[in-house]
Image (cartoon, rainbow, N blue to C red; front, top):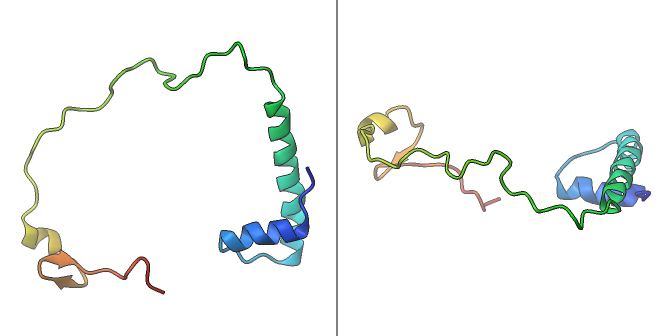
Length: 96
């Protein structure tokens, strides 16, 4: 599957990646090869293969959830650049 320069530009824009014309040409070829490889994988017959969701065979590798000691609020906030009402202040995620 050959990707066009416009398709690469669109993907780069979605990923917020500024690309030069040389990079667009380079990545167009590389991404096309990746998609061709994926097409080869899609053509493999996997009808007799059981789905695998856990390759280790372990059922639970997490530790028990226990309440333990934690930092006092004052100590946790002592190096914060901005604090308001006992909480960290950060830039808004959804603000521009």
